Image (cartoon, rainbow, N blue to C red; front, side, top):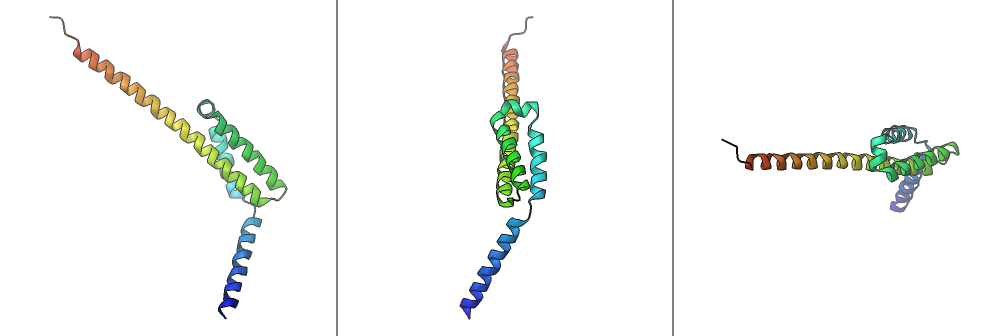
Length: 121
């Protein structure tokens, strides 16, 4: 009896997995498209050009897979594209933060120099 139940569960699980992969990942594709367009700004292109290019290439490949109804591969490529876009965005944000910290450090050094200077009487 346990064997029949186990087989039934296995078959049911496989059917669900198959159904999940035969459904077009349209929501994922839409989110990925927005993310890739977002990182294709000039600023991100300067700080993370490789990641932006990879995001665009994977998205374009995902679109082709969607047209060919290869939804599993389209999903994988869209996920990779989304990850590349998020990495590009993170690199850009890290670069901004680094520049702010450097500017703050320069400002602090300037203040130290000015406060160490003797005031003429």
